[in-house]
Image (tube, rainbow, N blue to C red):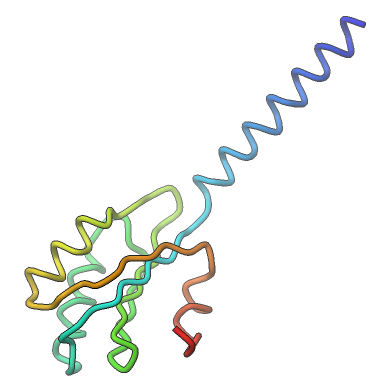
Length: 113
């Protein structure tokens, strides 16, 4: 009986530690809707800035969809506040910040959003 309790506790601990590790190893895609971006020069400035951020591994600006897409590095996060403050300082109006577990490439090429 003691063995079954110990095995149950060990199994629960292994399950929970694996779940926690999976959450920190996951990369998130951050999609920000932005008003006011109309030219490639606007996009280049935003891309250059966010590429320097230590939590960001990839950046894409889609002018036709009015989106800034960021891919966070595994185990790292860029805050919504950091994103919106920089976009405002650049002269644009951030409308909505969304986080998704979908891959950066899938969100980048999904023309529905």
